[in-house]
Length: 383
Image (cartoon, rainbow, N blue to C red; front, side, top):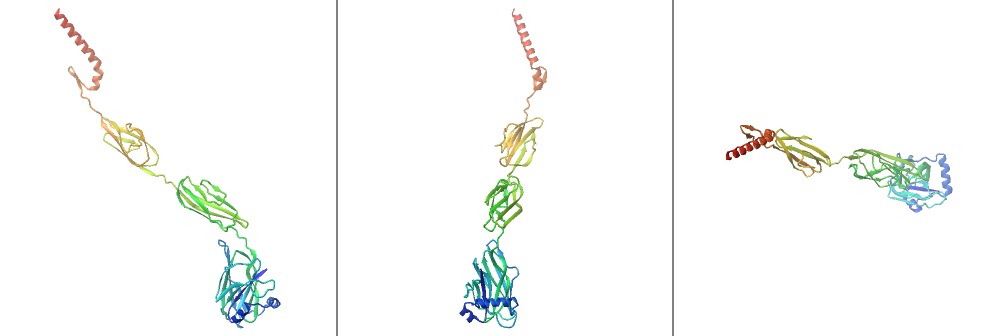
């Protein structure tokens, strides 16, 4: 069944109030339809405004706008009616147009075909003038040709067809969309993805998180994903309902960064040697890196120990050791001169300590012989 939207404008307000935007009885209306088929009087024109219907799939509403024009100089337009669906009843959410009063109501006639009307009352539309009238319906509807009727306040002067809402709800395909709680994160941080698709009758979801863990999901979510390797990552979501499917892909949507702390190791040395591995100066390492240390003494010097930030040095007394980077450290390799031992004089010969070590057995033997000879000579004198 159909309903009628009736727009009342102008000069015959007293008649309209008295009749409640009345229409001719069914027999007269039938005659109008016959006249319309052969052109009628052609005083009025009703056109669907370009760009309408305007379907808001997110809010599930549909807006229709019409341009009504008085073409001839016969008289003012008092109202016009648009024949709409009676079952199911359209739910009109809002009205607009140049009028003192606008309402959606049932007409005073009942011919078994026509139903509710929208009335625009209190505006005069004169010859060669036009105005825009709009209304918004709940839900999205298929389009069809519907009848319109125009009246100059006394007579039904014109009728015709124009595109309008049908009785068939429009099957709205889904529009996939999603968002993330962050677009930049450290590697291994959690990123939460939330579905923002419309309308609310979606039946399946298919998520793709290449490079992430997990790499896919097949429920609405939200979904928590981690990216272990630094880089940029694309995310996509495919949704379906009974009317169709849609895939939304966001390229380079997530950036995972290497947030490992970079630590500084400062290495110095005292006189008498140097640090060959890794060298001396300032070096940077990731947290947890184990760094080899090798200190080399100059000639005449020897390594003593490591000092400074030595908490994680494996052995501070070893010239070749390691340090584990857990913080910024400054360390020093310490060296000292090797002690010099004075030479030793034996008889008429002076020997450095190293030569003395070689002659020591012979000196000992010579000393024993000399002592023995002295004792023997002393014994002979006594006898």
